[in-house]
Image 1 (spheres, rainbow, N blue to C red):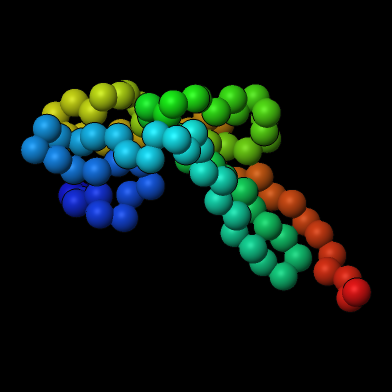
Image 2 (cartoon, rainbow, N blue to C red):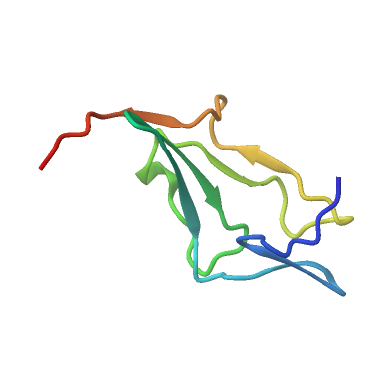
Amino acid sequence: MTTQLWNSAFFAGSSDGVVAKRQSVSAVLLASLWPRRCVLVGLLHPDPVRPFETSLLPDIPFVKLREWPVRRGRLETVWTHEDPRGYQVDYEVKAL
């Protein structure tokens, strides 16, 4: 599988290979919203100005690069949790 990294949150392709961008953003939290549940996962920047401490959100799995800088043009990822299905939060919507 190949990618041009055009829509990547943290990477860009260059003549030097894969380079970091948006280094002022340490992590991104993604939420999948359903009528009575949301599921949370996160993305970690491989080379941020300030690393995000995942211990602040211990139940949320984050995906990160296995190794930085990227070698041989291969982006390999790992999860911070064994079960990366996401942290599920059930809720009830109430009228105001």
